[in-house]
Image (cartoon, rainbow, N blue to C red; front, top):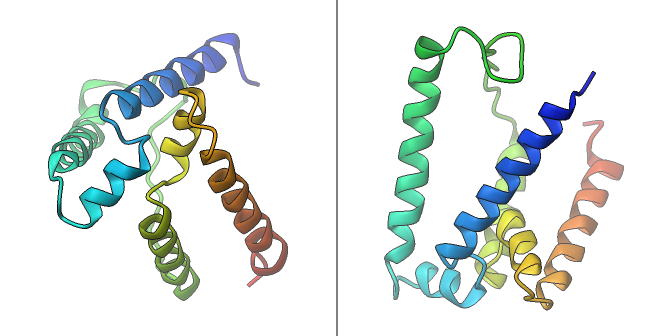
Length: 138
C-alpha cells in the first residue's frame, strides 16, 4: 500500500529532477542538438555529474543505510540483454538525435512552457503504445 510519504517522495524527486533539467538547459532541443553535433560540450558536465553521483550513491548507499527510505530492502536485478532491447535503444537514440529530446526533458520542457514538445511526447506515447500492443509478448 502506497503511503502519503511515498507519493510526496515521488513528487519531490520529480520536481527536483525537472528543476535540474531546466537549470542545465536540457529541456531545450537546440542545446541537445548542438551537444550531439559536438558544438557545445557543456552537457558533458551535466551528464558526467549525474552519472557519477548516481554510480557512487548506488554503490555505497546499501552500506550506509540499513534499508531504502521507502522500501523494505535493497534489491539487485540481473541484467539480461535481449535483441529487442538493443533494437529499442537504437530507435530511441535515433529519435533523440533527430529531435534532441528524451522523455524526462520533454515533460520538464512542457512544464517550462515549451509547447512544441507536446508533439514529441505524443510521438513517444504512440511508440510506447505500439511496443506494448504488438511486441511485449515476444
